[in-house]
Length: 336
Image 1 (tube, helix red, strand yellow):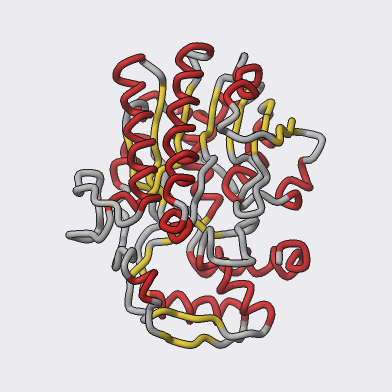
Image 2 (tube, rainbow, N blue to C red):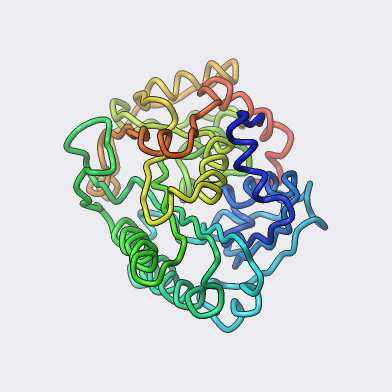
C-alpha cells in the first residue's frame, strides 16, 4: 500500500529498528511483519502457533528467512526475557480472540488476555523501559452502543468474558504509561478482514468463513442481517499500528480504528457475492448462545486517531473484498 507523504516521514523511524510482534504469525501480525520487512526493520515474530488461533506458516512464506520466528507462548515469561533485549518497538497482538471461546473457557481467556499481558508489561518495565508498545484492543469493550458512531468517550460495557479481559489489558497498558512512563498505546479495532485471515471457521472473523463458503460454491449464513458493522481492511489496520508507534502524541491513549463507515450484514453479504461474481447466502435467526453476547449495531468514530496521526483508511470495501478473494483463490487449499 502506498503511504501518504506525511506517513512516509513517520514510517522512516522503522528503518533499521528492532521490532517484536506478539501473535506475529497470525492475520494482522504477519501482515504487519511484511510491511516492516519492506520498511527495513529487524523483525522477530513470537507466536504459540495454537491450532485455535490465527497463526499459519503460509502467512509468512514470502518473508521466511527475513524474520526471526520464536514459537513460544506469551505466558512463558522466562522465554520472553531474552527476546525483549534491544527491541525498539513491541506490537502486542497475541490474544485469544474467540468471543464464544471466552464464554466456554473463561479462565483460559483471562489467563491469556489479561494475566499474561500484565506479566509482559512488568517485564517491559524491568528490562525494556524505553520500548514503544502498541496494543491490539477491541471495539467489543463498548458492548451494545448507546449511540452511533461510537467515539472513545462511550461507556465501556463488554458483553462477554473476552471483552472484559481485553478491557482490563488495555487499562493495564495505559496504567503502565501513567505510572511508569512506558510508551503504550491501544487501538480499539473493529472487524478487520483481508488476506491471511482465518477462514476455516468464525473464531477470528465471520467474514473469513463467508469468503471460504463463496469460494467453495456453498451458501453462507447471515444471522438476521440488519445489524450494522464497520470493517477495516488489514493494510489500513497495519498503517494504523505503524503510525500509533511512530507518532509520540498517541502514547498513553486509546483510539478507535474504523473503516470509513458502516453497512448492514445483508449489504455486506451482497457486496461479497458481487465481488466474487456469484454466490449464495441464507438469512437465519441468531443462535441463542451468540445472540446473548451480540453487540447489535456498531460504527466507529475514529476522528481522534485521524487528527492525531493523519491516518485514514485507503481501501474501499469492494477493493478489499476483491483482494481477499484473489488471495484465497490461490491459497484456499492451504488455509481450509
